Length: 323
Ligand SMILES: O=C(CO)[C@H](O)[C@H](O)COP(=O)(O)O
Image (cartoon, rainbow, N blue to C red; front, side, top):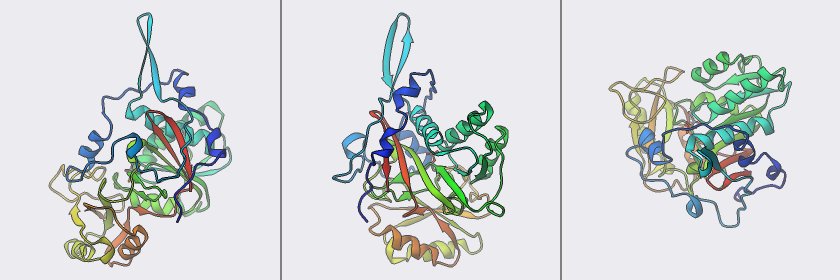
């Protein structure tokens, strides 16, 4: 598959500078990728640094739609500073809703700190009346609760299985827009919902871009609790996953930091095993197929061939890559 490209249509969206200058400012003390890595994967190797080493394949053009700097008043002076990671997440979350969600549509709402900004935006636009007649399918109990608190009308795939668009974050994005998802433990519901969407829009800050899936972020796999140690051994034997180290997720299911003694339990009452790699997976499609064919595996966090477009916020602005 050829690497994803940037389309001219995608270049016409709202630039980061546009809405940042409208006064939206969300300040977080969380520094970029280093904090993400410690939250998710103390055993993982560091992700590529920002900028030239972000994993964009040679020849891939990324349009820069705005300047992701924030201007703040400091006394009489105006001081420009780099946007925080949360500000970048907010930019892409809002832009995805502004560009892809229309009145009268059925939408999928992702899970995680980036997707939460998209949910927030849907709530705002419904409240202001700019959006009407939306029905949303949440991908986790957390997202359902956030959407309910914002008055977003909800349904499930049982009654609404044709979605116009789904919007979600990702843990890693490769040059072909294949993803690792499930850092937040919601991969099964995310996948079943996002597979039903005509358009799947991925929203990330630039720290999520990588040259190859695996070493930057362990790949989560949802497995049934019954004989889970056996299932983990079977996974480690799969040829397309050679060299991986399966680690049972403990404590809070919403992150892969071992912050408890008991296995983390998903919304579907299953466990998560995080597959730690030292080198990139050679064939993510084969890896996904072999995982899916393993008895005891519910689903896995490799989302290949699903992305319609990826909106990326970085220190130099927002870019959109289309598959
Ligand atoms: O797959 C997910 C949850 O299961 C999330 O989309 C992924 O973990 C990214 O989360 P965040 O936006 O908080 O970095």
